[in-house]
Amino acid sequence: MWSSDGSKVYFIAIDKGSPVIYSSEVLSGKRTRVFEARSGENFRGLAYGKWLLFVSNITGAFEIWRVDSDGGGPMQITDDKRENGSPAWNPAGTQFAYYSKQANGAYQIMVRNADGSNPRALTNAASNWTPTWSPDGNWIAFASNRGGKMGVYIMDKNGGNAQLLTDKFAPEAQSPGSWR
Image (cartoon, rainbow, N blue to C red; front, side, top):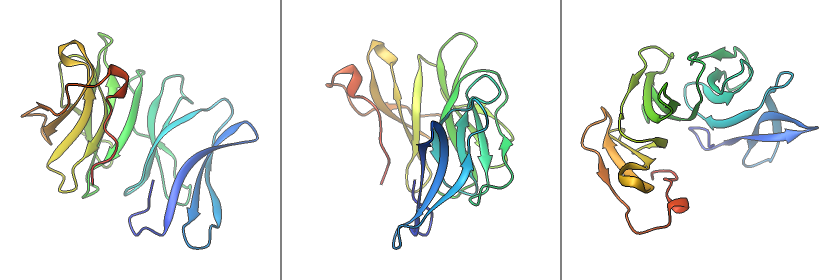
């Protein structure tokens, strides 16, 4: 995950058997520990923005947490005791999208304000994962199994106008990367 000024890359690595969030300066290669896993904790997913967002299972379910880019101030953002993942900041840094497993077992794309307030579902059909924002912040691409097979879709930032972008690939090949 690149910093906004392009000077650092943030990533999750395993060090002595435990996950650690690192930053690495692009020009010098200097690597810095940003946040270390607590006892029994696993990380998945990382997003750079106003804060670093990461997914942790420290509370028993995979929830989204935030931490300052220097590792300070860890704070849990989601607390619904369900699996949450793939956080992605909008370009303005005012909201982030993610997927959340619902009570019925389906995964839906959600969005929240940067401070974690005002969670709302953008999808409600089938299961949906891996949101990524368009550069202008008006669209979100995501993977979905609507229609019985995996595909990459886009929808507007409010969850409307969903459109299938792919339809001819193997189910395991359908996941958006990043939008450039």
